[in-house]
Length: 416
Image (tube, rainbow, N blue to C red; front, top):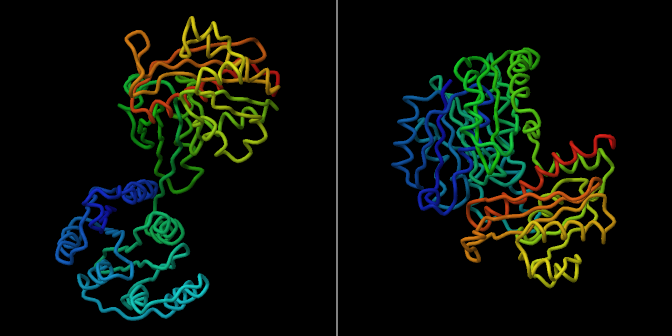
């Protein structure tokens, strides 16, 4: 089956918002073995929406629209789809009652135009909106499936996962199962060369490298009639990739570096303390976004100025004077200082130049030093990163998390 996604809303064409709905839907449809060949964005214009629907109906089996289900005059998606299909609209009483109850529960007055959100073709299967007020719909006609979804991502995603996915799954005799392997610190081209033979002979399952922020996700996707059958297909490929990349693979599926690092610290019953300079608390933010981070993170401090490094962490003034705040010597003393003052098992520190200014020929923007102090002394590393200020902060944080993961593997085996 082939699907097409039509994003409706002038704000998409004006660049006011990104079309993340299309990305989400394409990913979800691929899991079902449904191919997406076209993404279309169209403004809030009846004629252009009709034109998009006409084109989609000629080349796709499933046509999904997002957006334009609100109560205002420019929300015309549902009406235009109904017109295209030659169907009228009528009040869907269960939807109207839900909308009325929503306004009552929030203490707001429901205006007359909100009833518009409860209007549907009688042929439609109405999809309940558990997050907002605008219901969606599935309409089958002429061996085509038309799916009308709200625009706000939270509403659309919830509706798709809970109501659309089961409907589409019933239409397919084969399901798609995927396993994602996360590789950090190796470029996409290097990874591709290392698995070139696997890519050349792939069939079912397929292998897809997806690059993002210093990591590459290797998605192994199998088409099978059951989870058990898919696992049998995926396992040999997964084992071969694991053999080739070893500890460069940090996790699977929905794992993140921060999640893996927190879990590894917890499994080893270790406490961590952080000293951040150029990352400005971003590293701590990533870690504390993980449930249970309080089990492992004792404290974190942002020592942005030289004075703070000296007073808070005990970095020697002579060290900063001689080597600079951005140096492995300063990073080393930062990590040792936070570990000593906090009583943590491990102290980690990062200092660098995030840019866009502040760099020199000797110490350019993107130069970052990190240190980890623990059971077997203190280790330091130098990184040369590229990107925007925010990008360098984020990449620095990810590199430290990955290094911390490897450090735990190499130094704290007996704690398990």
